[in-house]
Image (tube, rainbow, N blue to C red; front, top):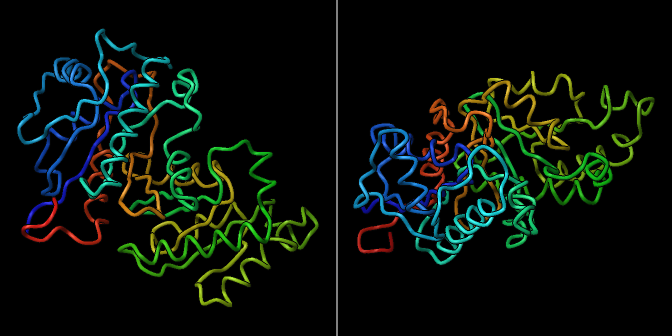
Length: 321
């Protein structure tokens, strides 16, 4: 059986993405047996390898040159040129996955500010994927906890406005079907409330009674294993240590504060609802430690491992790899 092909992007050249990519790919004993292809800039990769004193084997791990870097990329801060480059790295990898040239895309962190400075109209990588595949869902996986985000990179006021029975019912149906297609199969979904104490029977807000509970009841009637809403301050405690219990968080920080306390070094961002696998480390560009050679590659390594595991069918001999 031929090994699957996994594309790895360098992320923002001014962040720690190139560093964690080089560190991860230079430790083949920690990675699954696959054919790896880097989407990025040879100049950026050369600079990072020199800084770390590491040289990747370009024959076994080739680079798909997607952006020229005639000068040293700006480091440690958002910058328009880096935004354009990181978007192109990502866009080219996604194009390759859509064409079937690779089976999975593992994306290093990008800077949303760099994308904005470059005039990129999407807030982030998941938003770009949602543009191509409406209903794509941001989830976070670890050995300790799994979280699915009902909304992610939107202002809190907008996130609260999205909490309606119709939106939630659609989301529950989509996330349930998408999770069932993964290695985890039919999980048990625990829905967090929006308000303190999950509304306290309407005393602390009516969203639970008017919107969330009816959507949960509809999903349960359709055969989904789902319960809630649970007070947000206890639902993660119930899920910790039980990754088969998927917490549905209603907005970004509600889910990710708890998740990153549990698995910051090893958590993985997984986009569900795509015809190919996409994973990413659960951290950002970490501009504050760029150049210090102390970026932790564990989340990138776990993202690569999980991408391999989630590929539904490994290519058979003689097939596309």
